[in-house]
Length: 161
Image (cartoon, rainbow, N blue to C red; front, side):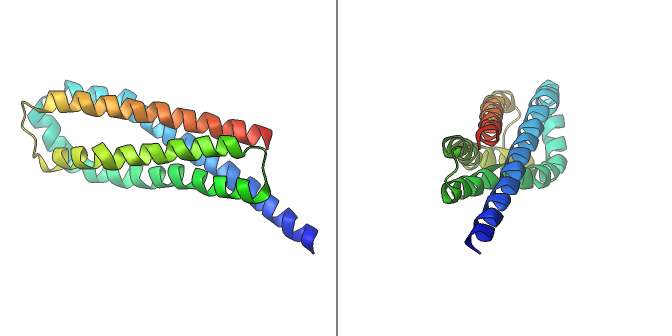
């Protein structure tokens, strides 16, 4: 009975590990796409045009990115807990993946939540917009780097577990 129980936990951990790496990869890909497709387009737009568009597009972007961010952040954390429970040799890499995910989430709450709200509600002046979009792009690119690093850590974890 004990063997079956441990085997079930190990199998579940393997499934969660794959789901975690997949979620990390999807999040990294989505962030990189936004950085390389949407952000350059936004920065070329006239401020009034951008604010009008973002007012309409902001809620859709949130609905798209919120589940990806939650999955790409929480699954590595859950996998880290699983790695600890099963005594995985990959514990170190899952800790890195989870920490980077939490850092990305922290950056969202520290900067993006209010910046996106300012764009959506047009509570930023047209004169301030170019500088704010530059700042937004900087923080977004940092999140892209963290997302890719989190994915790499997850893949390394899977490779050695």
